[in-house]
Image 1 (tube, rainbow over the protein chains, first blue to last red):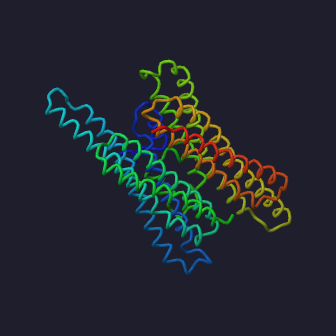
Image 2: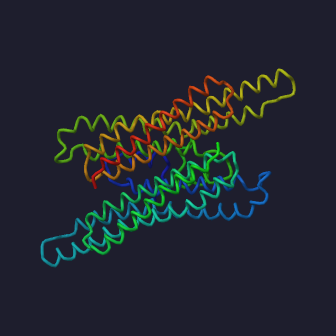
Image 3: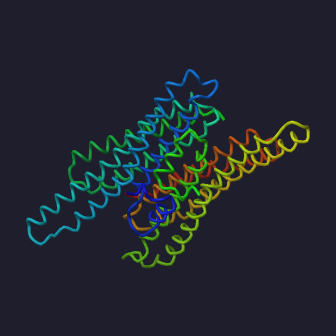
Length: 205
Length: 205
């Protein structure tokens, strides 16, 4: 899987003329980096003088953030796989009417999946803003910039994933699905931009 | 070096209770991801029907973006090394007056370096906004979201690196250095936020 590649290889493959890994996988990776930094700030708070009463809360946050980190790692591949499925559907035979119909349906199915995968990344990256805020406000002061970086990475991960939702929506013919998803996209965009600003406003250097 | 670790290991080390790799190395990595995506859009434009007259320009951009990608990879380590140098300076002996003086100077020197390394990441991540804009506006339309993600990653890389500059400035006693650097930090912040907005405004989905 992509997450087994080293950073140099992953960046080299991203830079190549192959469409995957691309922006969608990078969005999932940056959400993973946000979750990892959140876990780090929590872990750097546990056992530190002056933060004794936060021990339990930070332990819970560290575990939760590590769980999200692992989830986002899976999405690095899921996003690239979803893109490949769309490409495969386009390659299906289209000689007979029946083949055309099957191909059309497979393409639509694959496009919906290619929208839903980054939508799930966006939803989850938005969700971790809650624990990022907690580590920024209550966590080890010496690691507050790491919390700030986590907030910005989660914001960019969310917005990046949403670009990948929107580009796929453009080719999906199920109007109800498109409308419902567009509405959710706009809401997440609004929320994540507001939350990043709020959290950065609480960073005391 | 850190870039030889696979994504899973790098994220795990980031999440651990060791201060490095932290936000500074993550900033360099996300600048590397922005450069890699820029190279990808250029590479996906070269040789494609309808983009024949951009062949030369996109070849230059792809090479430049790949060079920046490799530079940012080096900064993933440089940032963590700079942090470790500060920690090492704090561990120097402080028994005699002479030792105290040496230690104080070494700490100040290490802090300046720990500010200058992310400052260089921020300057360079700001600089690549120029080629990101070019691939977004002229590059392969099918990869326009990858260009958008590159712009957002470069913005977050820049701002993240600048947080790491600012936190170090707080402990640096050379007032002239601090003032000059603060001024540059504010200018880069302003520029990168404006450029991200301008580029995203040019993304046609």
